[in-house]
Amino acid sequence: MEQRPKKALITGVTGQDGSYMADLLLSKGYEVHGLVRRSSTFNTERIDHLYGGTVQEAKGRFFMHYGDLTDTNSLIQILSKVNPDEVYHFGAQSHVRISFDIPESTAQTTGISTLKILEALRIVNPKAKFYQASSSEMFGKIQENPQTEKTPFYPRSPYGVSKVFAYWMAVNYREAYGMFACNGILFNHESPRRGENFVTRKITTGLAKILAGKQKKIYLGNLDAKRDWGYAPEYVEAAWRMLQQERPDDYVVATGETRTIKEFVEESFRFAGINDWENYIEIDPRYYRPTEVDVLIGDASKAKEKLGWEPKTKFKDLVKIMVKADCEKHGVQLKEV
Ligand code: NAP
Ligand code: GDD
Image 1 (cartoon, helix red, strand yellow):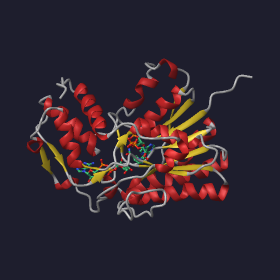
Image 2 (tube, protein in one colour):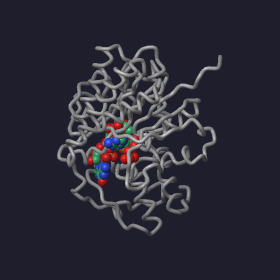
Image 3 (tube, helix red, strand yellow):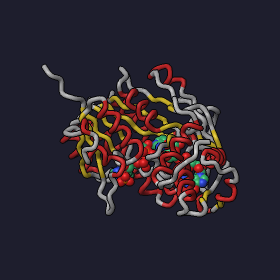
Image 4 (tube, helix red, strand yellow):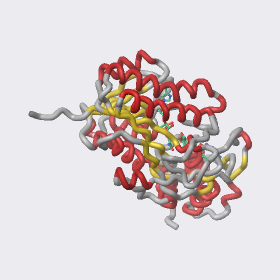
């Protein structure tokens, strides 16, 4: 008898990770369903290659459904209709600084939505496997270095607090109802599909626009914070592997290397052949946060041991990938240096 393809539902499919996850699952033969919210302008740029049919293999296996993470009925409707084998919950208000401006709606979208989906799954489809997009932001004011699955949380923003709530909901539904719920505690991961108001992409887009003569300066906040930056397509592979294990569990996904924002700026400009980067950067206190996460560095030993997952793309290569992509987008020819 022919086996039906596995079905997955992705929330946040129009975002960076959701779109890479859709690519990955389609390449593995899944039928992929994505939850998309209504927007006044097109918000499907990252998945147009799937929906628009440029990726032939996606034809007939990629579906979009209008819904909203704050709308319980839409979530129940979609989950009942699709009846997925796996749910990847990437949807969130994912911007840390903006979460200080809209704390309540961030709590709804980033925290409570996890509860809504878990509760809906418990009722309509308790056998489905669930992935929670947990975050290194939960470590906030770090309690030890490097951070592991055992490091206590100390969130420093409404976003971080919401993610801690969602993390524990996933653990609780696993323990209380035996559901297959995993937390991927992912450290920062970037790509040419990264939102343009996150610092790495803001730097690489700004640089490309400066080279194209469309912009003079890049306005940034705290250049001294340190982040453990990896490459997004590799990180969604780790998330997929979590749901293929025999038992649900929680995993840190990180590179183990930490760099300052200043280093990211320097490396980007150096790669583009500019040494006096200071002349192009202005500090704007608007981008400071009321409480900052000063440093993050993860230890992904458990993911290596249990999932056979390891990061491949190093810091300098990540910078190169992003600068090249943005320069191409803005019609800038780079001399290799
Ligand atoms: P992203 O690019 O900001 O994508 C967020 C997605 O959520 C978008 O598709 C967005 O839709 C959707 N969304 C927001 N509010 C919604 C609502 N009310 N209803 C339905 N959909 C909604 O984020 P990302 O970088 O891909 O991250 C994916 C997930 O991993 C997030 O949960 C994030 O918090 C978490 N995470 C990210 C990182 C990282 O470094 N990237 C690290 C750890 C954890 P629109 O396209 O319409 O805005
Ligand atoms: N966004 C932004 N814009 N950040 C800036 C800027 C700026 O102009 N200037 C300096 N920064 C600093 C921030 O203060 C922060 O210390 C660091 O750059 C990284 O900021 P973001 O790129 O916005 O990412 P994040 O670390 O706050 O959050 C991202 O990673 C988390 C995982 O640790 C997001 O993707 C979260 O959703 C994710 O959970």
